[in-house]
Amino acid sequence: PHGDDAGGEEPLELMPNILAQADIDAAAATKSVNAHLSPEEKQAKLTAAVEAAQRKKALSEREDEKVREKDRRESGKTMVKTKAEMDDLARKRDRDSRKKEKDDDLRHREYLRAQLVLDKAERVAKKDKERAAAGLPPLPADVPKPAPTPAPAAPMPKDPAAAAAPRVVCVPALLPVLPVGEATTLMLTNRDFLLEGFVETAAKLADNVLKNPTEDKFRHIKTSNPKVHERLIRPTGGESFLLSLGWRRAGEMLSLPADVGAQAMADAVAALSARYEAEAKAKADKEREKLRVEREASMRARTLEKDRLRAAMLADRKEIQARGPSQSIRAVGLPTNNGGLAVNRLNLEEDPEDNRPA
Image (cartoon, rainbow, N blue to C red; front, side, top):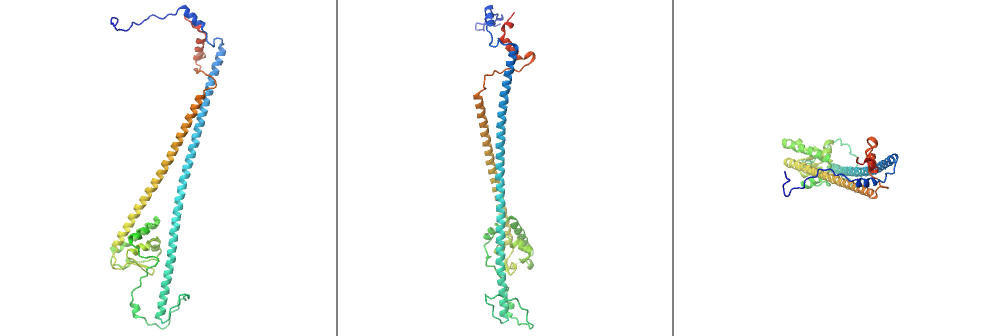
């Protein structure tokens, strides 16, 4: 229908292109380089080419296996190094914990020694007072104090003024009354289990006084009691914290005067607990952040190592490709039916006379 168009395409030529006899003869005269080979020699040459290709493939696979093995070893070394760093951090935290525990025990022993000295001085003062009441002179300071003697048979007259004297409050010289803020800061230097035990016991003590303000028994605690000593006196700054809230020491007793309320103590204990929880949370967050930074650094190091290995593998492959095979090898297909497609193609190329058109 477009044959009459001025700008139409040229009509297709449907006639076959028949070669002239001269062209056919020229094609027959062109022989392949392998035309002189027998079929057995052609098959042997093809087999040698296939074997060479297989050897090349095996060599490439061995090179790839070497690279993978190298990558695996480097990855193992990185993992071992990371594990060693984590173990070092765990050991450091354990050493720090043991050191803090040792320091706490040392401070506690020093406190006990000071308390023994104070108790001894109190006993000496009491004996000197008894000797003064009996009309005896006090013992010199450099003379060892004798063992207490039994009471005389005849009763000694008591001094009414001494009997009416108020109870002496003895505050240890090594434990001055600190402000509540300083005492709170000192308490926060304790280990977690000591501080938690102190807060629990002190809160219960304050609650008892608040609920029973007229009960005198809740305003006195005996520091020689093992549980009281373990929870309130053993922690560093425990007694200083109580003294800062109005408690007073008298011998082995700590007492809260009747004119001192317990609400301030309850508020101070709550503030101590809140500050401890806040610092514990901040410490945990800091530790988690430190671990996160360490993990990210380790991951970056592994990523850089992998990138380096990939670059090395790529460079090795490029070097192998640049060297090329030891001799020119033409890729051929594997044998199929009737000797293989490649053999048939060789036969067609080498013996065109046998396949010329009839």
